[in-house]
Image 1 (cartoon, rainbow, N blue to C red):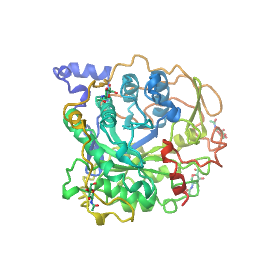
Image 2 (image 1 turned 90 degrees about the horizontal axis):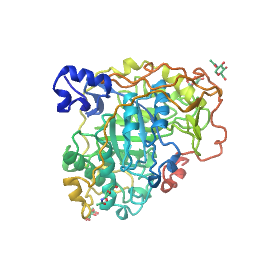
Image 3 (image 1 turned 30 degrees about the vertical axis):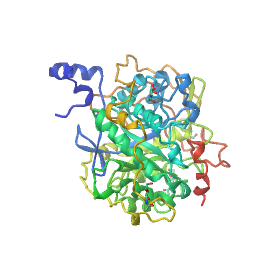
Image 4 (image 1 turned 135 degrees about the vertical axis):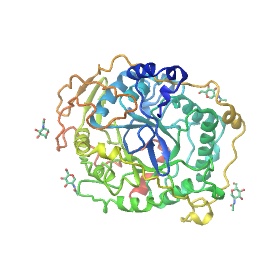
Length: 483
Ligand SMILES: *[C@@H]1O[C@H](CO)[C@@H](O)[C@H](O)[C@H]1NC(C)=O
Ligand SMILES: *[C@@H]1O[C@H](CO)[C@@H](O)[C@H](O)[C@H]1NC(C)=O
Ligand SMILES: *[C@@H]1O[C@H](CO)[C@@H](O)[C@H](O)[C@H]1NC(C)=O
Ligand SMILES: *[C@@H]1O[C@H](CO)[C@@H](O)[C@H](O)[C@H]1NC(C)=O
């Protein structure tokens, strides 16, 4: 029998009665593995599709290490948000900016109980906490790596940590592809070596790319290829993901959105591929027609699902909910996405057998890179001075999270539905051990599920350049989007 990491400690292993007891107290999602080109749930043997939401309440300002604040620092808001996500069938959140020195046990345990995995970005917008798109050598040094390793340590004990992203949209056009690629492989190498040496579970490391077609294919090949033909090369990404906003509006189709092109090309991927962000918001409202394609017959063999951008309404107008003070208001986009997802047969999607497809990665060689100006040199920067000791022996001090018992799953904060009525009885329904969430596991009513109106939706973003922008450094990207 395969046991989840929570129960694999010797204490719980002593007697099965104790194990059963422990399971009723603190259930844990099964930690997933990458096998070939898929995520696989080792507890069931089934392949797994990501049904995700990007979670960065407050945008970049929601990350304030000096105030002890990041998206997973407040248990009350995590409980509220986890309950609302659980109702709509979310099984994964993506969290961008995290401080390894903050305690995340309550939030991680709440999302775990709700059957929701976490995709963790190891970088942040702060100086010294990310690889820069220009002159990347100025940002690649020991203290930077120490930050990323500390984030890895802080989240590695949680069974619901799905993967780490070594970078997000660091390459977003040809100028930024001139020098960055070898640095992305170097940081991937360092993270994977850190995990191999210091972390009990083999948690995968991926890269989240900008879906800018001029650089997308080279970025994918640069990250997935095998240096000297070695598939176990530590600098090879375990996963490739893309932030894609090409399916826009209710008239778009699988072909016109170019999702068909993406699917055709990524068929050849040697590693899992998924959407690390999607949800074009021009025009509004969003009807989420693309989710039918993403979880349909054509795409599920190639894409492991996707992450909707994003949970909270921020200036760029991509929210499913609005938060003002202590009150959360559900927006029309939440209702419409929930309605759309409720029409999908999750049980059959999440119980498929893996294809066990092994695709040999291309060999890393300069001719693999097609665009003139995209770095085609696979000689990687060496580990910066002082950092090898961290990779060998671990960071000091070592942040260490753990799943804890949540005594009360009832949401205390105020939640209003899209018509302004207060939602009552909202709570997280803790799942059984080895379960993860999908539609139907939490049946609490959250208001108007069948709305097809723009009520509560985005009103004022039509004139904005609405590309979600985590980092000001990514601004030049906007131009590419309309190219
Ligand atoms: C590494 O990061 C931790 C946590 O932020 C910090 O306490 C420590 O001083 C850092 N160590 C180095 C060598 O930079
Ligand atoms: C997208 O969904 C909307 C709302 O359900 C529907 O009216 C529209 O016909 C769909 N678009 C396509 C191309 O199927
Ligand atoms: C590739 O990069 C390495 C390290 O920066 C450098 O020494 C080498 O000359 C480069 N090779 C080519 C062909 O430019
Ligand atoms: C949902 O919203 C739509 C459009 O505003 C409205 O026509 C419908 O009656 C509402 N349904 C419920 C159950 O409130």
